[in-house]
Image 1 (cartoon, rainbow, N blue to C red):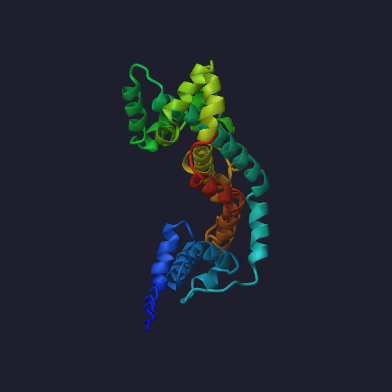
Image 2: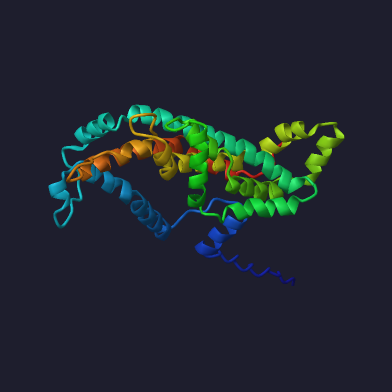
Length: 302
């Protein structure tokens, strides 16, 4: 009589918990989904970030009497578009926008171009006195800009550039922060092997800059250009000293004379501030995704 041996059933494979599977998928390169807490935090930060802009629009749609009441208004009134039209005409914002775009665009492009070249020199070239020059550049960032106003104004007056846009453009063509920013980026993002390979192929220094440095530094150049454009657009002190509201004003100079009187029209001032902010929001809406994507995609390109 033969006995039949039966194989005992195998133990079932335990199923990992959902959280463990999600963590494993994230480590394996799978897409992780945000939970309700993350969405709540993002919504909170979005509301806090947008509140000043929304409050500016609400204040622009009211009048001084309503703005002085307690509690203040938390919804739009009926005067928003009227106030925006009055601010546009009174401050001559059409001409001011053109002047500021010219000043900010020229300054941003020049700063990005010169800072990239200087940053490459400080990061990858070997020359005598490099560290000392870099310390001098960094040291200029610690000097308050107010100290240079008097000698700079004397220079502008001697050149007879008062109330002309070149008096605002020329002092902003070079920026120490831009040089340091590009130097730090290229120090890590640009391998020495790529430069050496270009040298072996017979590339000159300018060809290395144009065909190697600029493509690698493109994400940082976009970020620096955005920062410098916003900084120049919002600059007030120096343009206010050398430009007049009846000449060739920038946006900030034009807005300085808005709503003046024995009782300043706060709603009109808020309407002008809103108009002066909208171009920056438009620029970021158009180029913000490309800038952030350029930072995230990596540094070295072929």
